[in-house]
Length: 350
Image 1 (cartoon, rainbow, N blue to C red):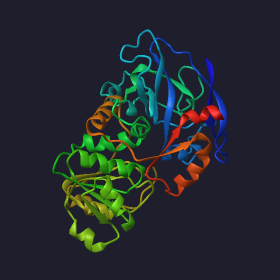
Image 2: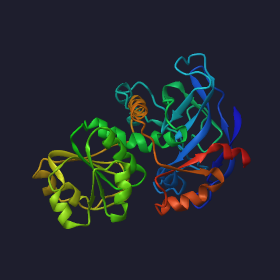
Image 3: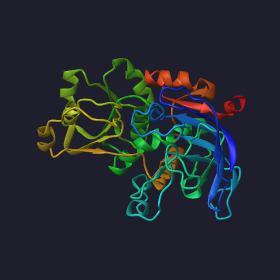
Image 4: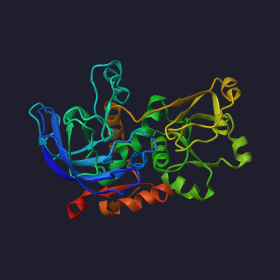
């Protein structure tokens, strides 16, 4: 084992502060990674503040990791020292259940191991994430990052990217489809970029007229202001697919009215109770509401390869690790366009 520098929260009321953690010595199946960049996800804030009532302290957040391979185990064939790689929300699973065999490790029937606040099968206790100098990960959960991508802007692809790519891919969004992305934030801006790159007629659906210009710069063909009843009527029953990225409970009924018959709205943002839904809106159009959770490793690699082909990355604001608490305050106020990414070299100064 080796001690490495990290940033951690000791309680739900505490700021993140410098903290030393232990990383395991690489096994024959492991890849050791020096972390260069780590994205800041809203899930990090939820876990630090124990909003989901499952946090284990100290919390070292971070599951949008980009770094350089510094050591490999004897059984590792697909990576070499010096490779630029990624680690997302998962670092282990049973690899044996039906979900894992279907490349859906996030739904592992025996419990996936998440990058932080998961059960550490090697050292005991719980896992620590990417707000740290380095990480040791099983080779099956390490991802190749296309060399043409800006590494720092690729970091949020490991969560915000796959969270929005997976439903668009799984539900077969294709060229010519009319796709609505509800909410323009860290997730929504990636949804717009992906839908546009897939060739869909992409509509940003927002409550804020002042986001129209940004949405079009990201690739939206149209902007629909959901508070405008006339606009909503104009677009009623016309969407092939809706990606709902709103991160809090809300009224879904107006959005159901936008769907075509036999079409689907997928929720990726609101991990909490939602307002009452009127069954008639679904029944009368044979419409569907579904949910989606990140993506498996195979699918995440497919997403990264697509990003390499189409030069898709996140819009980011770089910060030093010493500024993380201020960044959390701004994240709470949605004051970022559209993801913070930590330059982990700054950790050496802590």
